Length: 112
Image 1 (cartoon, rainbow, N blue to C red):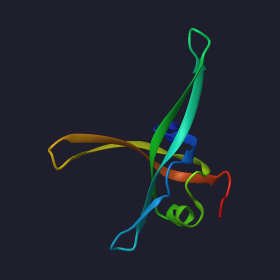
Image 2: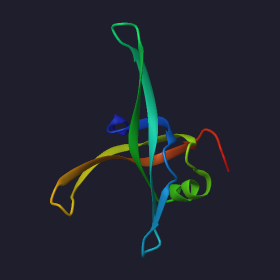
Image 3: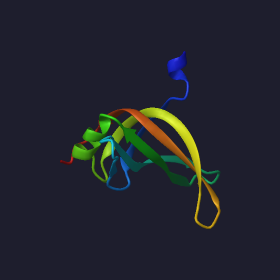
Image 4: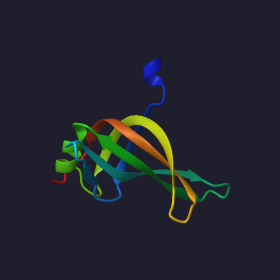
């Protein structure tokens, strides 16, 4: 049952080109957001569509796949775990970020 704890699976489209960061030790990290959508009918029968944006972080060997094959607008499947962190702005405001740390990635259509 431990493999089911804190597990996130999403299918969505990239909202921007992935940002690739290389650290001094040679390790890389990729960040991007994906959009998922949902729709329902309100009490008047009108279709309501919503888009949700998810912050995605990719580390280790999967970064090479992101760097070479993943582009804005591409549909992908990710699986990972949900994390939360906070930081303080220059103005002293505390901000919170929710991210998915990816451990599996599947490309649904390739644009490159």
